[in-house]
Length: 190
Image (tube, rainbow, N blue to C red; front, side):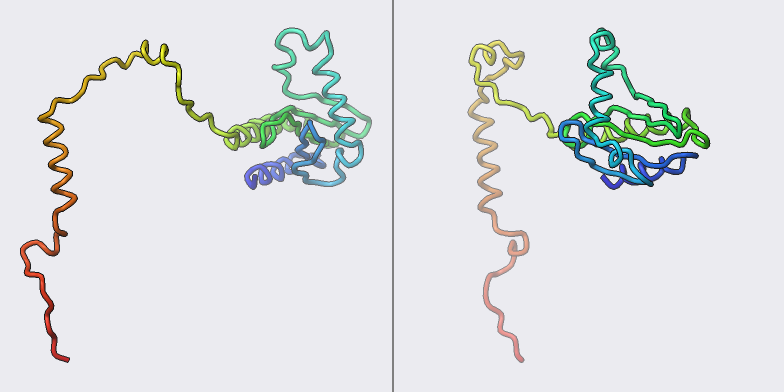
């Protein structure tokens, strides 16, 4: 999470950037926030999420690949821009990054590119922190019978005796330091 914090602070170096926030959609919880007066504290995460959801889930825009291809939503106000970029937050839930940009001094294209890089970083962290897919044991006898691994022949008796003999010798062999020496107590003068 520290790398994300550093990247979010780095976004504030963009000309005109005022604040950046990472918000979890399901709960409206602010995961991270940097900068001056935040849009989340002024508008509330629920209102911004409602606006983004209205755009994404609109029947005319939700058809086709638009909803999955949507990267960000730019809201233009008199004083500035609010860019909401959709991402996944650590834990696997959907979230969004909010960047508030001044209209007079802000560079909208530079901000969108930097926010896109930050979204890719947040998504990578979220995927890395997701629980790994563990292998499952197959209890289906029919499937096991038809599996490609069919060479299940038993080893011959000679090989088994050789392997077991080697294991016994290594198990019962004296330690290396005691081989070739007499065991006994040595008396030393003090």
